[in-house]
Image (cartoon, rainbow, N blue to C red; front, side, top):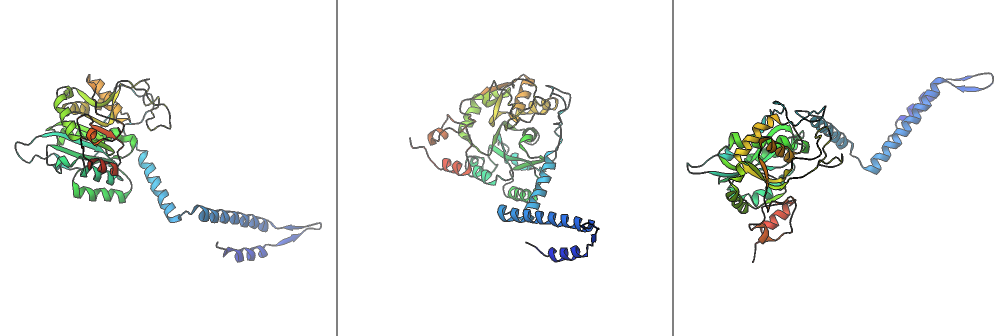
Length: 364
């Protein structure tokens, strides 16, 4: 505790004059003010000492973290196509303009390496900057069939923007090694996943238009690629006018403000959704992706991306198609199940589990 102010305080106190009245001795106004100031300083000092000693706060780090949090808060205030002053309408006229710019753009991801080559599928994987371990685990396991984006299956990890320069730099360095990241300048938050979806669809129709099918998934999902290819072959006609996966035809908005999936009355005034195919993994044709991208300009923004896609599907007169094997949960692990024809996706599979599953063989 720094007590260097005490001698100065004593000197000032003695300089304050004590005046005498006939009946009593009074402390001058100077002394009174000074005493209150001293008491205040003592209290503040004691509180500071207690905070530092008992809560073990590193003040420089605390101030730095505070500044970073303020920046993040300011970025998250970004209101772009999302301001809702009245209940969200079901349709609009060119109200949702996806006018963000690429920060990282890998044109080579859909490059054809010979005249006879085709791209059967492009996979868009939603991730965050901090999830490098998840991305590496996926690259080492179920993405190995892509042959580093040179086979008939291609993929990309999708990101928005963040304020932290250090993690931005790490992602830039990662992309220089793998060349498999797409990033635009919208703020990368859960509330902005619809922007990420539209970014994926825009990329599919402008830079990978020769791909036949599109899969959207997350970085904590196991995808059984051989099983998925069989589904695409079987459902190829259906997918020209449908989105397929773990689809639900009846769902109600969550009105609990504490929920991850909260939707206010203003953002969605209806009592039920038009259904949705879980964003943990859904597949469709590039034809449908093209139509969704175009119709989205007239469908007001909604923050739950899989519900938003269903809104566009309903507007187009297309349908949601439930396919067995797409799971928005994690079924108990059985290598013969996970590598057979009856499971396509499994959700909430962390990196170490993903690698373990991949290295376990079916013995029956």
